[in-house]
Image (cartoon, rainbow, N blue to C red; front, side):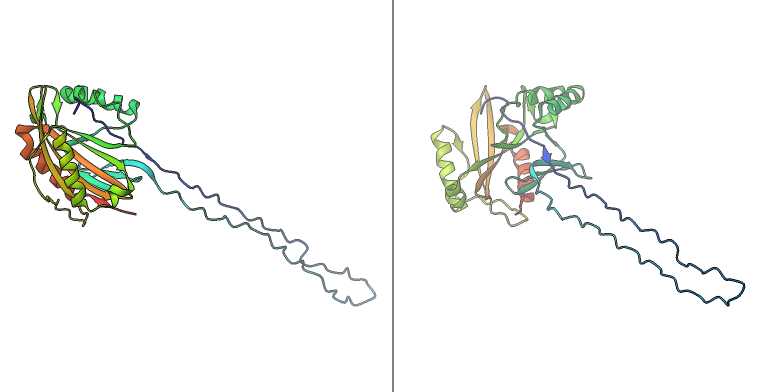
Amino acid sequence: MKKGKFYIVSVLVILVLSLVSLACGVSSISNLFATATPTSTHTPTPTPTFTPSPTPTSTSTPTPTATPLPTGVSLEILPDARSLFVDYDNKYKVILPKDWVVLPVDKEKLNTILKKLAEEQPDLADAAKAFQELDSNVVRMVALNGNREYFVNGYAANINIAVMEDAMVSAMPISFVSGALEESLKRQGLTVLTDGVNPVDNKNGVEMEYIDVERSLSGNRVSQRIMIFQNNKKLIMMTVTTVSRFKDVIFQSLNEIGATVEIFK
């Protein structure tokens, strides 16, 4: 894993449908009654008068237009300070604890956050600067843990969510995919700490598994937990990375996050 290669998209495009109110015109009615003028030699005979009927005014009825479904991703800070991340393109959502800081994809917005972080947590700002060039079509979310306790030599514990579009892989049993990924990681020289089937306890019934790995990086021992699930013909991987001595705490945080994953249509 290259130092700092992570970053997030937190943009949602919403198209708002505006309805135009139509006013109806009302025809005025005049000369409701006309009366004949009497003469001195005749008893006046009432003459009936016509009352014009109002001309109905046609009104146009607006044709309902379906509101487009949201696309992209969104981030909402909940009342309890947790972050709700929704990926509309890939049809899932997840909740992150308040310790995790999600970064925006837009560089201008990212610079705004970096300025704020520079004042409040300079170390975190430095870590975030490295994650500005990821492909948002693949990497859907990145978050840094804001607890300074887990900073080591410029590294911050981080989470990223990556999506791989592959109809075949997304249709395979999740246990088969997990096994194949495990073998691939071993071939890349990583130490795989888990073995067999390792299901994630998800409260929404999403079938998920995880793999734990370790590697050496710049003199530090680094640990990762990779959670995988499938949806919308995609394989979705949620990975947390931390210096190994913090893995128990950080992995448990990912377990809590994985429990909240929910898929939708």
